[in-house]
Image 1 (spheres, rainbow, N blue to C red):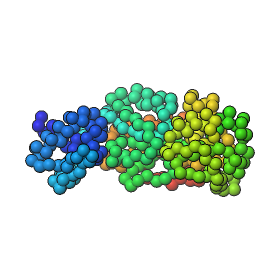
Image 2 (spheres, rainbow, N blue to C red):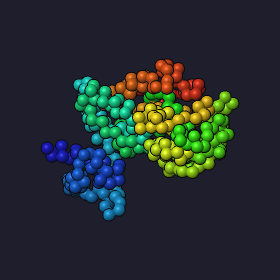
Image 3 (cartoon, rainbow, N blue to C red):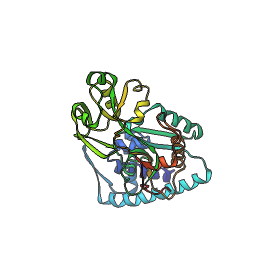
Image 4 (cartoon, helix red, strand yellow):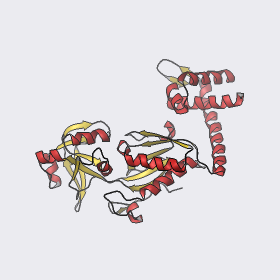
Length: 325
């Protein structure tokens, strides 16, 4: 029992260091903050040395803590590898799967996908967070990210392509009746724009190449708060770039209209991204396989998804970000 308590205390210590707080470590390990603190005190008593310098505002490793943290990580990784090897033999995925996805993916389709996965693998608990930022999977303890991106992932990550994920210019019916429908890219300069981040212009593509049009920004969101942007478009504030998938959400389906469809916006690909490991946990492998199976089903605006379509973006072949495992 002593060894088991010490192993858990080591896990708590690692999580405290990686998350930077007892609260974050407690949340990841499903413990109370008080219990996480007790585990660290147990570990320090067992080792006979202080591992962390604590203040009301910050935590920092002592010299002993730095040495122990590196050894602790190695030991815990070996334990995890052993657990994964045993799990692979049993052939039954289990445990908690932490997934991060963009806010525009918070749809009925996502819930249906998780429901069908859970029917197959009832011993896996899916812990899903919708965040409009690129989280650090390793540092923040996530198993998997669902991302729409054209950028390569960080070193040590695997990117499995799922499907193209087009973005279009969205407007409300009321706005178009009031302000008119843009007929060409140049017309966008005369329309109100809801912009995300620090952008100042529209970036489109067309038969003659890329086009940049100055944007008349009337509302700006500091981050990609897709649902908030969609609500702002529905309210008639202006035009905005939105994922085509948002148009199928029952909340927005009857309110949103797309314009200038012959001049598409950025056209990223949807990927399942996870850390490269010697033994990929069954919970991750089965979830990724299920995602790939589900994304073979055409979306309402698509025909059947062919291999060529899944390997291309706007007709340009895609070089795999990282070779599939």
